[in-house]
Amino acid sequence: MIAHVKYLPHILVLAGGLALTGCGGSSDDGNGNGNGGENGNKDEFTNARCIEINGPGHIANSDGDGCIDDPDYVSSDAKSATAKALLAALGLAEPSTAVTPASIPARTADDPRPAFPAITLKKSSTSVDPLNGWQGADYKGDGTEGTGATAVKYTGEVRAYSNKGAAERQPFAMSYAAVDNRAYYEFIASGGNPSTGELISDYDKISISSSSLKDNGRQTLDVNQYSGSYDGASGSYTCIIPAGCQVNVVEGKITGITPAQWRFTPGSGATAPKGASDYLEFGWWVRKGKDGPVDAGTFARSSGGTAITDAAANTIVGSATYEGSAAGKFAISNSALPAQDNSGHFTADAMLKANFDATTPKLSGTIDNFTLNETTKGTWVVSLEEHAIAGVGVAAGQNAKTKWSLDGTNFGAAGGDWEASFYDVNDKGNSTTPNSVIGKFEASISSTHHLEGAFGATN
Image 1 (tube, rainbow, N blue to C red):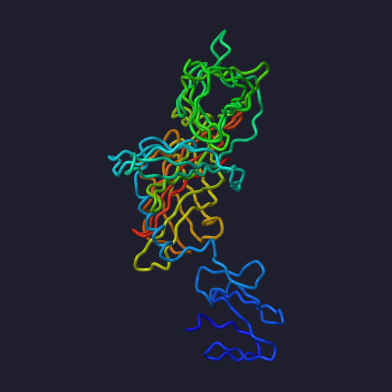
Image 2: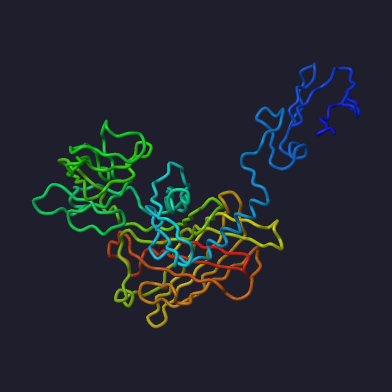
C-alpha cells in the first residue's frame, strides 16, 4: 500500500510506484519529505497539505519542502480529558488556607478530597502581558505527597496581576520597623505576620552571595557572615547556628532557608521600597497531578491599602464607576458534544458601578471582552447582578448572583456567586468614595460549563 501520493505536474504514478516523466523520478519518505527529483525542484508544502497527507498534528517545516510534527497539537481526546479534569477541579471548595503567589497550601483529605501537598512557588521568568495597567507575573513550583514508591508529584502555578508600581525608596527601618538599638532583623516563615524587627522569608526578596553555594539542592553554609540583600537593600546575612545553616538553591536562586538560623543586617544607608505592600492583587491558580488538574481556583487580596470599614462605609456618598480587568480559569466538558470541549485560562474587562445611597447602597458589574488562552476571543458576558453593599463591600456567602451568557444567548436564571471589597490605595484623603475594588466570581451553565475568575478595578 502506498502511504500517500506526492503530486507533481506531468507525472503518471503507477500502482507499482514507478513514476514516468520526462524529467526524472521523485522520491518521498512517506511523511511529505521529498527530494524534488533530478531537476532539484521541490514541492511547496503548507500546513493544510501536511494535514491532508499525514493527518492532524502535522505542519510544514520552515523551508516549506516537507512536513513535521506540530509541537502545539493536542488531540481531541486529550483536549476532552483535560477539560473534564479541570471542570472537576474547579468544582472543589477553596483550600482552608488562602492561596498566594508564594504558595498553594496543602489540601487535607477531609477538605474533602485525597490529600494534596503544599507547593512553594517562585516567580517565573516567563513574561505575562499587563491588563489595563495591572502587571502580570507567573509563579511555579512542585511538591510531593507521600514517600518512597507511593510518592506522587504535583506541580502548581499561580498567575497574579497587581497594581504595584515602581515604589519610591526610603530608609530600610521606615519600611521594616526595627527593634530599638538593634541593627539586625530575625526571620519568620513565609506567609507569617512579622513583628517589629522581623522579616518574612520572602524568596523574591532574599539574595545571599557565597562561593560555597552549589547550583541546586539543599545545603549547609558554615557559621559566617555572607553579603547579600533583602528587598533590594544591601547588607549581610549571619548564620548563627554553630553546626551551620540550611539553604535551598535552585538555578542559583535562594528558594528556602531555615528562618531561625539566619539574621539580616542592612548596610549603612540601605533603603527599601516605600509603601511596598500598598497594592492589590488578583489572579488564578491550579495544582496538577500526572493526569491533569486536581484543584484550581482564584484569589483577590490586599497587600496594603486601607480597607473600607463598616464605620467608613456609612459616611460614603454619591456613586462611582470602577474599570479594570479580570482573569481566571474555565472548563467546558460535555460528553454529548465532545467536539465543543475546551478549557484553560481567560482574561477579560471588568466594570463595576456603585451607588453609595445612604439607605440602599448597591453594587453591580459586568465582565466581558473575554480572551481565551491568550488567543481566542470569546463572546461571553458574565453579569454581576446588583446586590446591596454592606460595610466593606459585598461579602462572600451573601447570595450575590452571576449570570453567564454565551454568544448573546442568556441561559436562564442567575446561578453563580460573586463578592467584592472596597479599598483606598495610596489615598490622599481627598475622595469621598473608595478608589479601588477587588473581588471574585464564578458562573455555570448546567453541569457542563464552569468558570471562576477574579477582578481588580479602580475609580
